[in-house]
Length: 352
Image 1: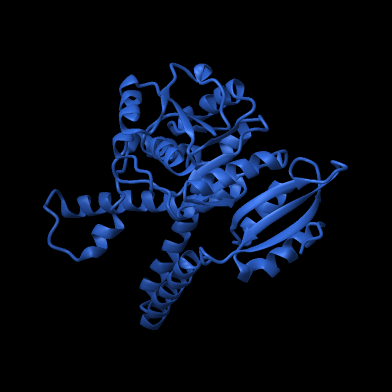
Image 2: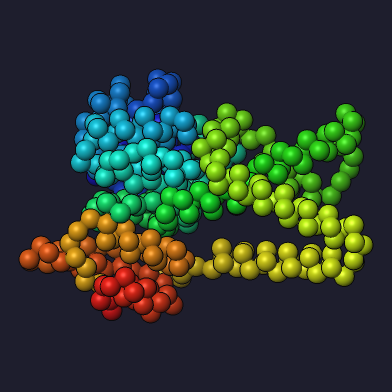
């Protein structure tokens, strides 16, 4: 397997380390900074350095690991230079990029992994172990390319999860981008309220709630801009909810405030339970479906299961002799097998 990296920072470097160690891949890297490329070679994140994307040669998997605003141009260059590769990215917004890239060999991606420190010097081979890695196939995505990318992601130790680009951005606006906005505002409000005084001794609430405040200003400015529609919607909804809390305060209704606080505790518990619940890594069940041999079918199935919260541990495609139909074999949590069969059947494909 040959893997191409356009960008060898923390994420790109960690992909290279994991791909070489876990998959025996030959990794070619390109980076605008020669120093970063040299360090990537020294650390074993890449096998060889390329002087440009066009000079990479060939690849089975190509990953754009560059800044959000540089992704469209980088992805286009990878698609052009490596038409036989499945091209993906690791950016935290997906809808605008998917709309900008028409190439069928592009499948957006976003690993939910990172670290406080950036750069290839801090890359590590186990960064993606157990992490959700969102993939955003589209209607025209060839099944063989989605299978190749999903297996690659799983081989790095992550959990490939299909999601539509717009759904991805809405989700990230709620659980990632809005919390950064709120953290920034809490810090600003505290600074103004204290009038330049040193923050007095406090409990952990303020520290924990503002841990991400001011993180990587250049990167987050790009993320806010790229996801402005979904983030704007969530900000408007937060303003509405703050107004409701203000009304409870003005009413002086202690019982209503207690109920509001209790409801938040229950909702948080439910959200964490969903996040922590997952398949037993050692227990999987195979299900199979007969599908027409045409682009988009595998993406359709993966997205339907992803929307239902069912993760595909592994998959395999086998075309029939007539080349008009094929068998899609999926391995997933046995608890979810019957529900998955039902969802696939609802799409019109016999499954068992």
